Amino acid sequence: MLVASPRLVRSGIRARRLRPGGPVLAWAELQDLATDYGVPPVPSETPRHFAARLSNSAVLGAPVAAASPSGADDDAGQHAVASLTGDFERQRYGPPAGVPADTAAEQANAAPIRIAAVRAAFRRNATWFEAFRADWFPPSLMSRWFQLLSTPFRWLGGISAAVARRAAGSWQRLFSSIRWPR
Image (cartoon, rainbow, N blue to C red):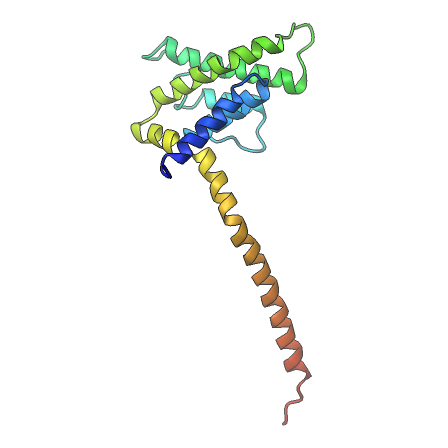
């Protein structure tokens, strides 16, 4: 049960994100999927740059313009990433001038299908080990767990460093106040 828990937790997070909730949750799921398959987002990256980097990576398959052996399958993943990016940008930044915005219901209904297409493309282009790790020990979840588990140790490390600084200062004051015979 303990070994299966990362997979179960990640599946629960995915299910929660794919409920009708808008493109922001679908975007978070896309970023976590990309992290699980080895293409983590960079904090300073815009959504469009992340999507371009993801589309040009081998993890998603051949770019739309390139010929690929799996053809339409890779195109479905590429189009899904482009659609998820467009939905997220419209939600976050507003629709471009003169372009009618999709309804929120259409976006919410399309998000699970698009995420499934991206996930299928990732699995198709991944090695067996990458797929195993993404399913059973997803890096997007494991990094959060390690950060959570290391918090008490970082806290204790900060306290011990402060105690060591104060002790060193006390010893220095003590030795500087002693008059040594000549």
